[in-house]
Image (cartoon, rainbow, N blue to C red):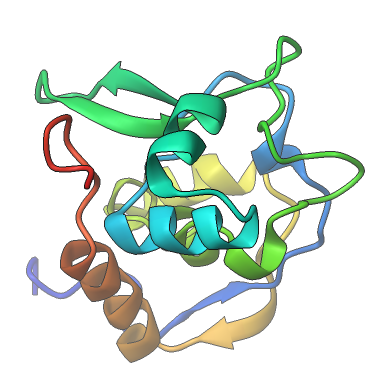
Length: 150
């Protein structure tokens, strides 16, 4: 039984568009190659220019330099301005929230995330299969490491 994820029967989540996950606290929005391509296209920039204007290299938990969006001085996402300016081309990390491995690894982590997100445990029931698909998408689109961005 220990190998069966607690979310096998599904979890409720409906985004309330409160923007709490986009603002107020420092954090990282990691980009995959697909994310970079979509966002550069959305801004009519080539990938190198997009990286130089909107991105930063940060060290991840494994000590690798990875690509992340910049933040404004007030810690808001670089693309937040009374809402997401990149909503249609937003990164997979944003699309799949809160169904991240770190959040759904335990009931405790899920409930901790719920304390800061009014959409968790409300609204639409996402099936265990759908949640697993989100996790698989994140695996299929790895974060860009320095040196493999283009």
